[in-house]
Length: 506
DNA sequence: CTATGGCTAAACAGAC
DNA sequence: AGTCTGTTTAGCCATA
Image 1 (cartoon, rainbow, N blue to C red):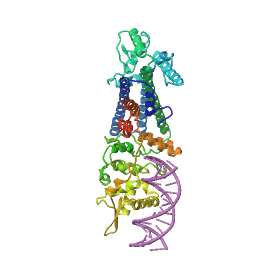
Image 2: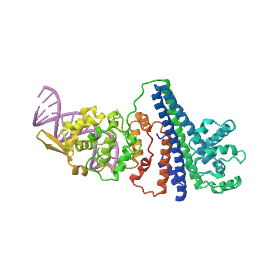
Image 3: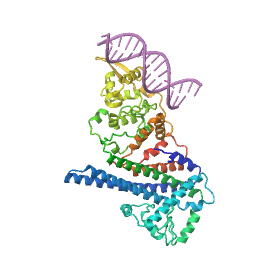
Image 4: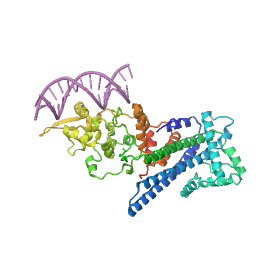
């Protein structure tokens, strides 16, 4: 996911730490980010609506006659293209709004930390964008885009600038052509100061938004926003290409595999709670219940980080024991996933064995029943039986927490919970999210792209707008962290992942 | 660097 | 004899 272009929240935080900014200034930046997120949400809503419309049309078609698969695909592609247009437009808006005043101000000295090459590139991009826009304005404005943008013009937020775009284009010639000035309002991010005439605006711009720490920081943030959006745009373009390619090369439609609910966040959540002694839900109970889409679980964040893949070999990081709430929730919630994907569950054998035993009505199982639980619950354990069965036996013998009880029918295994809790807790340090991604990508370089794709595909179909919002939210969260004290604990690292917006199921 | 935990492999024994 | 169950040891790796 993270390309060299993208800057992680941690890096962002680092950048911001170089600045001397007051909490108020940071607050301003945060507000700005939130406003941008709002815009992302608008995009998302619009897209969702398009999907709903499409769905409605499909239903009608179904009633009317046979649905044409080609038509559906074509419609989906049309929507994808519309989305791309919106994103492109959005990018242009952002570039113009947040960055165009920079060049004049920066000719004197470069702000600390800003690489000249970076700025040059930035200027070039913004200049290109401006030229592009001008050219388009001089010729004919593309009607579909305007239409699309008007589609959600009723939303609030002080960064809604679709109308101003129009206004700009017409008023630019007469009123000094400043993209930061529209409708008598200063369009510098987070400013919104009102001016009667263009001259007073210019005065304001030079005094309030001169080259200082604050403006530089805002500029940086805007750069990040633009970068994120560009990334997103690139991704959506790629997706569109894939869709088009798919339509040309008709292959068998791959069945979307169930995706795991974010385990990392679960664990983080679990850290703040007392370890439970019994499972909250038994697997047998959930087995009879109709399977619900995982994304519909309201309390669950939607970031999905698979820890290993089929034939990836053993993973070394196991989330063990202390996090058994997370564990049984993970197993229950990702039941379908574990049953369809040959993914090794990220728990130790000991934890799994305990889970198996505790799920049984009598809280005791024979060795064979434990085996059965493993194969029943995880596809992964339907292969290499000799290996994992040996490991199960080995664990049963090795750990004092497993107690063998002689029965009339033979022997059963039980769990000594006290002994189990005594075991040394596993600490998860740093940001679990990042660490997890890093470790999983780093373990097998040859599979990194596959894994990246897996992480990527965990995002909802067409959920690109929400993705943009997520990254922005992470950005905002980084800002937020910077505003609060720096002595955050382990748990706070996952805040951004926890706050990621739930994505719509299409 | 050391200790510890976890996984895999394997040898071995006893029961069935 | 072959399989299952259970115990133990050893080596490797990752992490604290």
